[in-house]
Length: 355
Image (cartoon, rainbow, N blue to C red; front, side, top):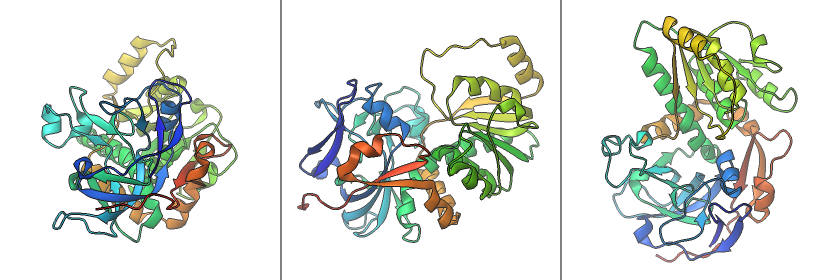
């Protein structure tokens, strides 16, 4: 089978290699990969910024946003050949910590979790992969190829869940939400805000291209230029850019009792001058909360499937701005002007599995 690999820590080491299909020791369910989503994490891995190969290996199969079809599965495992599935990226640590033991592995406390395509587990950028049933999520056939959006949607489904759980500390009726960044995660966060009937505003640096129309067609407002020019305060803010300037600016845009969720991950070494006293005063006197959120567990994937199934298929189709065949993988990972979401199509040129 073909597989996209990198040597973690080495810049520009991306290769398309040939491997044998993994045996059942890697998972009882054999999945044929159909589509692979490309995200910023993949580009950072290709740049050698981080990543860990599986034990005993020097290279890592990348890719963590996958839609596949079950090829073979044990009887009574909950999956049958032909099922559309999405694999869960993070797995609990082996100790396990309290959260991992409770199925909340996205909240691992000791950092010994593993992640497909990122940390110590091969990813899904291959023609075939194996998974245990507990780490697969059903995708309804009606959702079809848009199932490739389930993994990024799971990240914002978790973020919204935690925003709402924090909001319930008091009588809280959010009305206005701000999303900074109109990439795939930001647009999906805006979609969830509109599904909650909130007034949603999206801020992004791009004034042209497909993003403004995608936001407007959600029934949300699109803003560019300078964040201080966006009027009003917001009950919910979801920051998706990781741009240090925006991270510091969004704090001042939260309404009293407002909740700010940071989803983007900034590059270390970025420095800015902040008035910590003013930030402390605003947070304390306004009962505001700022928190970070990353990854997802099984219920967030299931929530993502429900949200995508309820979305307008025509809108989801426009979110995917480029489809690239596997053999042109380098082009898939290169940034193009006005890209929103790029996916890689695995065209079936692969080894024949043996069971």
